[in-house]
Image (cartoon, rainbow, N blue to C red; front, top):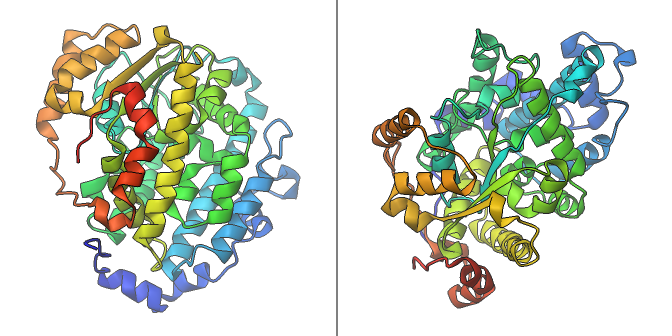
Amino acid sequence: MSWQAPPRPEWVQAVNRGDVLPITDVASRPLDPELLIDEARATLGLDRHAGVGAIDGDERFLEPLGVACAALEEEAHLTVLGRWITRRYLLRLLEVRFHLAAYVRDDPGVRDEVVRSPIIVTGAPRTGTTILYGLLSCDPALRVPEGWELLRPVPPPEPDRFPDPGRLALADAELRLMPSVNANLDAIHEYSGRMAKECLSAMSFELLTEEIAVRYDVPSYHRYLQSADLTPAYEMHRLVLQVLQRRWGPVQWVLKSPAHLGALPTILSVYPDARIVVTHRDPLTVLPSVSSLVATLRLAHSDDVDMPTIGRYHAELYGRYLDALVDADEQGVLDPARTHHGRYADFVADPMGSVRATYAGVGLDLDPVAAAAMERHLAEKPKGHKGEHRYSFDDLGLDRDAERARFARYCDRFGVPAEA
C-alpha cells in the first residue's frame, strides 16, 4: 500500500496532546444538540423565545442534528483539534439557521423570489466538475455562489459591496483551516472564500448533508442520510439561493456538487426547470482519487483513518449513485433537451471545446469575452499548479475486476472509457 498519512504540523500535534488549553477546554464540551443550540443562541444574543432555529415553524432539522451529534460522539474518533473544528462547524450551521429564520420572518417576500432554470453540474467526484465549475464562474452572465456566500448567506449580498469583507474573512478562516492542518490538501482540492463553492453547503443548514459523511467516519449518520427524504435539504438549498439573489434581481444560477448525483428526482421536484450537466470518468480512477481526498479531509478531525474502509464506502456509494443515474436516463427522468453529458477524457483533450459543448447542451451562448476569461483561467491555473495529487487503486484493497464489473452498466450506457 502506497498511501500514508502525511506528518502532522507541530502546532497540530500540540493541540492534540492537549497543550493548547483554550482549544482543549472548548473541545471537551459534549456535542449535544441542546447545548449547541443554547450556545448558538448565546452567541447571537437571543433568548429561549427565539426558538430552536426553526424556519416557518419547521423543526425537522432537529432529528438529523441528533443523529449527527450521536455519530460524531460515538463513531468519529475525534482528536482534540477535530472536536474543536467540529463544534465550530455545527455552531455556524445553527447560527445561520437562526439568521435565516429571522430573515424570513422579517422579509417573507423572499419566498417569492424565483430561482429560474438553474444549471446544476454533477457527476462522481474527480470527474472534472470542479474545473468546469471554475470555468463557468468566469462568465459574468452566470451567477456562481462563492464560498463566503454559502457559508454565511444572511443578509443578502449587495452588488455594490461584493464581497462582504467581514463574512469573507470569517469564511476564509474556516475554509483555510483544513489546508493548514494538512498541507497537501490544496494539491487535491483548493478552498477559499472567493472561490466558486459547492452548493452542498446550502443543504448543510438542514443537517442533511454529505459534508458530514465525507469529513467523518460516521456509519450511522451515513445510513440515516441514505434513507432520508432529502426534500427539506433541497428546500433549504432553494431558500439560500432566494436570499442570495434578493438584492440582485433575477440571475442565472450555476450550481455544483457530486452529491446531487444521488438525488436527481428530488432536485427536479424542487427545481422542475433545472438544466443538468453530468460529467463522466472511469470509476476505477475516480475511486482512489476521491478516497485520497476524503482521507485527507478526515485526517483534519481524526487520527483513525483507514483507506480500505474509505475505498469500500465509495465503491458502494457510487455503485448506487451511478446505477441510479442509468435508471434516471433510461426512464426519462432526465429530459434530453435539458441534460448534457460530458466525458473527462474529452475535456482533457479539448477544454474549451468541452465548455462550448456544455453551453450548447443547456441552451446557452458562450460570449467571446467569457470564453477569453476562461482561457486565461486555464492558463493561470494549469493542472497541478498547487502540487501533484498522488493516488493508487491498489491503496483501496478492492478487486479491480469486481469493481470493473460493478460499474460496467454505467460505463456502457455513457460510453465512459477505461483509464487503467
